[in-house]
Length: 135
Image (tube, rainbow, N blue to C red):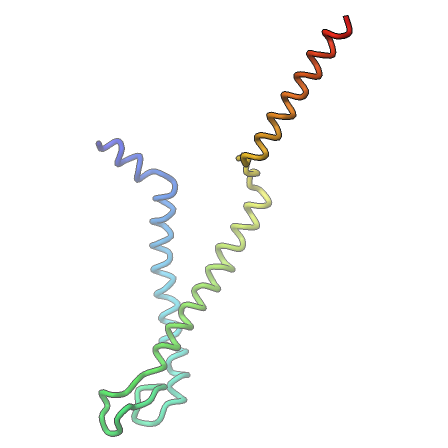
């Protein structure tokens, strides 16, 4: 039972996934700090004085009815920044490295396998039948 658990934990995909989660969490913290420190104050410039940022109030005089649009824009920018950086820092270089140094996928489709079998059978018939008819 413990051997199976050990095998599961040491499987390459599980370790890679754990590392990705830890790095992703740290990366999100950095991007969130950036957007909270820079983007949110820039969005607050567009809000009126006395409000907490970019947004609008549904009922005048009731601060509880303030709908903050700034945090939604900040979250969208967080997502876009994280997605762009992960793509350009991890995905693109990994894809280029895989095409440059990776091995070709050797799995054949069903049709490719059938074509190879047909060709081998044709070679076998031509080679064996040609020798018997010549004698």
